[in-house]
Image (cartoon, rainbow, N blue to C red; front, side, top):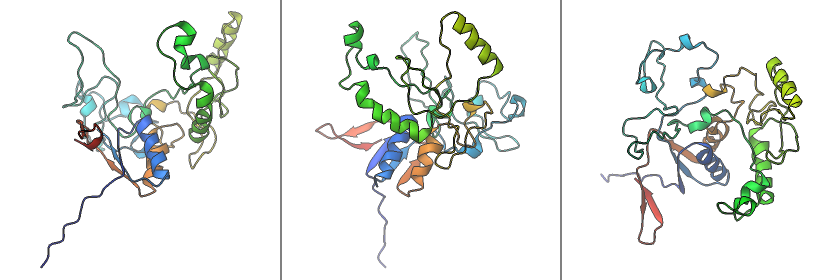
Length: 273
């Protein structure tokens, strides 16, 4: 009897890392009909795994000690296996110079740091693209703010960014959702700043306050740093990667850290180790 061996699936593109850049690339490519293999060094995670709406003492891994970032278990089967901030994973290929305390903030989990960051989402100003021309330092970008503006518009419409038009050059206006109302102490700060001639404005944050692409508006729980069960704030996992996976053209390879890119004699990448 002939033995039939199925061949491995061949993907058009391999994307390494599932944070803001990787998640965006995955969604755009999948929508274009491209087959994508998405590699993520950490585990899969989704809204059902987020532990918002609870007190710190209700979290099973509380008190797990120095290795708490790698804790798995507990009566609820709670898993906290993603690195957060300066935490390290064993075998992490990350080094610093001898005597240096520099620690790059990484989150080894689907969605990367987009699960945890404060969602402040600003546009670069016109002069940010031309530092050499502006103050004689660095290099001018080969593109301008005017070149980027249509893409800023597209991103803001897609993910939902709160804010209000303020006509501030250093923080260009965009396509905004209505921001959350200021709290009592916010109002006091704003009034005090006004007396000093300082503008205090609503933060531009990638948190939708309107229903958008199946995502309900923010319910103002204030726990964005823990992820969002309703996917109202932006994380590449539930805003981009999960919808891309629904096309059937994306395979996620979790817990898989890329070691190196293999190149041919011409310098073109041919494989990922």
